Length: 166
Image (cartoon, rainbow, N blue to C red):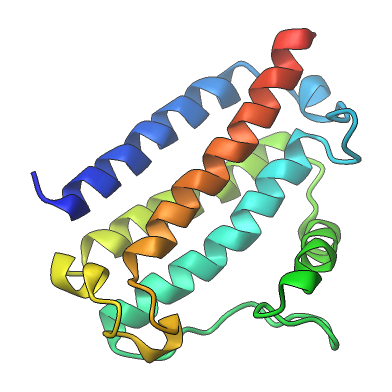
C-alpha cells in the first residue's frame, strides 16, 4: 500500500470513530460545556469544521492548479501568525456557531467527506513533493492531511475524556 492510501485509510478510520462518538451524543449532551473549556461539543466540531475548510481549500487548489482560497478573517488576524491562532479559534466558533447539534455534525461530516474525496484526486507524488506547491512554503501537501488527522485526534481525546467522566 502506498503512503497516500495509508493516510487516507487512517482518515477514513477516524471518520468512523467520530461517527460512532456522534451517534452517542444527544442535543443536551452536545450543549454541555467541556470543562475546563468554555466550548461545548458543538463548538469543538465547529472549530474542526472551520480548520477543515482550510484543508479543503488547499486540496482543491492542488486538484485545480490554483491558489487556495481561505475563509476571510477579520482585520488584524492572519493565518500565518501563530500568535493569532487563539483569536482565530475564538472568532471562528463565534462566527459559525450553530445551536442545532444535527446541523453542526452534518456540516462537519460533509466537510470531512469532501476533504477525503478531494484528497483522493491528488496524485501521491504531488502530495509528497515539498516543492510542488509554493503556497505550502516548502511543506508537502500530505502535511495538510496529517495535520487534519492529528487535530481531530486531539479533539476526539478531549471529547472522549469529558464524556467518559459523565
